[in-house]
View 1 (tube, one colour):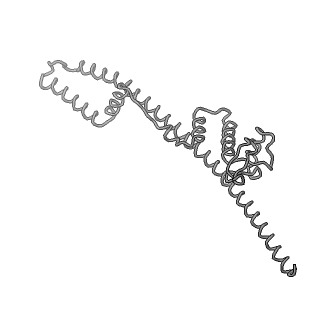
View 2 (view 1 turned 120 degrees about the horizontal axis):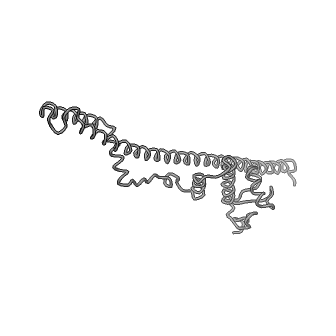
View 3 (view 1 turned 135 degrees about the horizontal axis):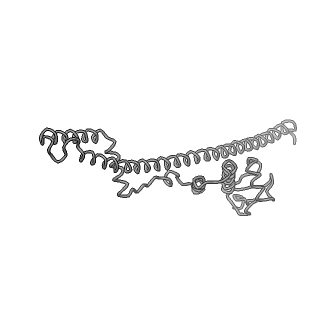
Length: 234
């Protein structure tokens, strides 16, 4: 049973032989990072794939730190999602809970910027003018030049403008959140592609080593056959 396990040169823990990684197959930047934290790690050492993945994540984090000089909260969130192997889209899902005032502001802005509002208000103005000028013969509640109507229009404009600005500010906040989410998703995609390149390079190198071992065995078998042919009596 002991033949199916190996001891890691770093943690000194036992792992299945299927997770065994030779130090020679590790890319130099990651190898240097391991050596920096473990002076006893050499080209003849071995490490488990789970331990190697931790150093890969540290290497990616150091790349980000070198590029940005300082890891932001968004980048830390991306790294955490990679460590937990969780879906980033679930973490950054926008759950906007609007207050009652914000909902009213959105409705007012939506209605105030529609043809329904324009046509309705135009109809109201025409009816107001017809009633006061023609039906009440300019002696009604608001005769020409319609001072009451001007007051109503001024009040509507004074109230409508800040409400629309409130709605626009909320829309800008949503746009900023979407931009942050897009940045985090793109960043995680880039980092996962780098990790994938690392793993593919390792697999290719591991396959090459396996092929060389097979070729060596085949050469030894060929040599044995040639020796038997040359020395049949032996």
